[in-house]
Length: 80
Image: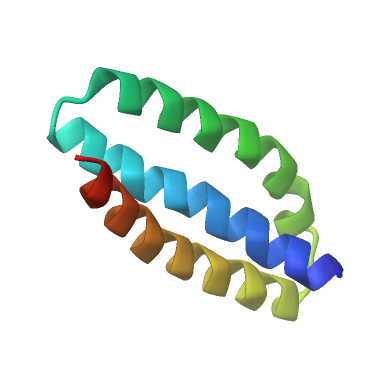
């Protein structure tokens, strides 16, 4: 269960980073405000867990982050 949480928080954080990048490029101010808030909020949960985790924790987080980047781009594009 902890590994799933780690994957999910990595996914969510980079999902919002990817979507935010798309919103910035399109000058969507409301999207930028919401996504940037979520990036920072989720980061507060991730920083300690990843920094002090083992190698496998880092791999799981990175896999979630990579998946989140792709999903964030797709959803940002669908919204706009």
